[in-house]
Length: 132
Image (cartoon, rainbow, N blue to C red; front, side):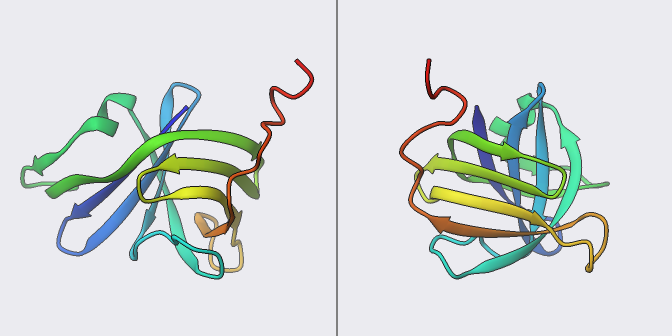
């Protein structure tokens, strides 16, 4: 599975984390860079799903909704260890983001809010393929 982080300047700089799932990118927006070491948490807002073709987009979106410059900040593969309603655990394997990350629902902040944190190095085994 693929992931991409796009840096987007649409009046305010932010980062869009996109994880491929079910034929689309599931997306979250962070107003700060995503954590690159354990101990740092960032609040992210779940955004609408987007087409996989958008994951390779770099350029300028013309005036209107989402207008602004977009560039790929990081990209790579990921392994999913858990995808639940309130927690998602993945190993990201990118150039800048590498290791085990967790997205945890933060309903006290609002329905679409999550917290992302780096928990450590990538897990050594993929639970989806263990025992095969």
